[in-house]
Image (cartoon, rainbow, N blue to C red):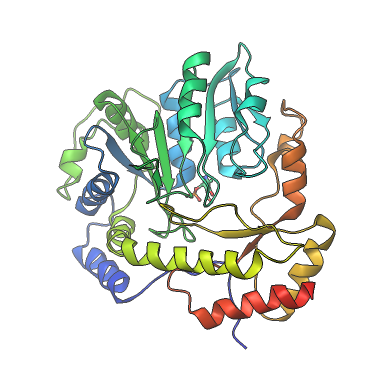
Length: 374
Ligand SMILES: Cc1ncc(COP(=O)(O)O)c(C=O)c1O
């Protein structure tokens, strides 16, 4: 019996052809494909007033976003403890400290009322994250940020291609970021992107992603490089390479199919599992959403046994995530009581979700969950 992985990238003839042409081109570093990928994301976002800057990973995007807004030693950045380690590590990398707030029990996104109790003189920014298939209340986030005069980094790693009240995710935030890592809705193998508002932000990001070189992107996007330039700012080797961007372009062309099939799979999961008394499914109809993963919540006392039972049937599951304040590195970070995060950390379970997932494969997962609770 085939093992069903939690994630499975959609790699077809188009991705293989795109990789081959990027390799045959022979310009392996940052080049034309990277510029084309940025433009293609901006077209998707329908955001003519925004700028896109491609980088090597989502983590790099978060790190640069924090540096861009001046976060540094002694500062605090509020974010849910129920978030990705990349967010916490990016904050630490600037010398600042993460401060952990709780999440809302229905959306699993930031609980702004709880976040409010943590705002203090050192608070420089907030990182909000759309968890999987339910988005934050971004209007309330903007009001919160204006009230406290802090910047917002919108971690939209899970929400690529989704819409929020009619607008594309990434098109309306202070600063938004995406990840295109191996398991994301679309993948570049590894990649990330920042969406910002001003040319000045673009200029600084271009330098920071290229170890501080004042090398114009317009030259590199012609598969060329300038040999003379100045270096006057801190930088990292965080640029995106042509091969990765070529894959991203092939993937983005398939977004309509990816959207349709992932959404249909999630709707079927909700219908099949929503009536089980022990299971809580995401409280959404998935309208306007391209789901990144499919999660359920089960009693914490039963989760490990369910995972074991599914593994025995060849079905992999995931845990997104263990909360940040559970890790040794972050357990001393300032935080609120986090009752919802504590509970969700024990209950959350990701089931397999793939683009173009065959119904028969999904049925095996559904039957496996039902059999466990029968
Ligand atoms: C919410 C969230 N933010 C950031 C990241 C980091 O992105 P990357 O893996 O591209 O560094 C991830 C990756 O899983 C994520 O899920």
